[in-house]
Length: 103
Image 1 (cartoon, one colour):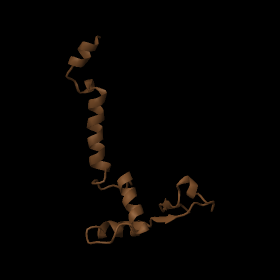
Image 2 (cartoon, helix red, strand yellow):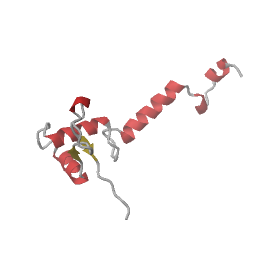
Image 3 (tube, one colour):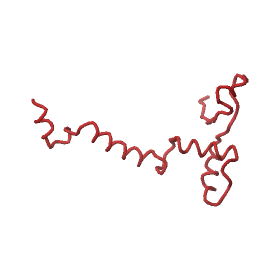
Image 4 (tube, one colour):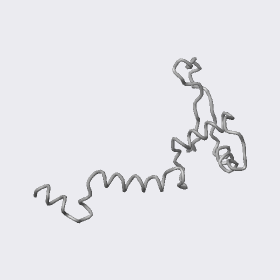
């Protein structure tokens, strides 16, 4: 089977890698991105959570629902567990995400 035959094939399996990536990327962003209703914390959500917890994002009516969600989930900022001075590493505070533990 030559590559010309594969490129000319109209079957769904004949998508090239870039077409597959574009299709998957748009689907993933729609379902798991910042606008999707998901528990996934994207980099953008992480940044907003840190800003809200550190007080960098001022409270407003526009962000009240997100602020409530952050507080309700129990996110918190804190220092590293080993109490070492990590300011030289650029790590001042970590974002802690609560988890359910089975008894």
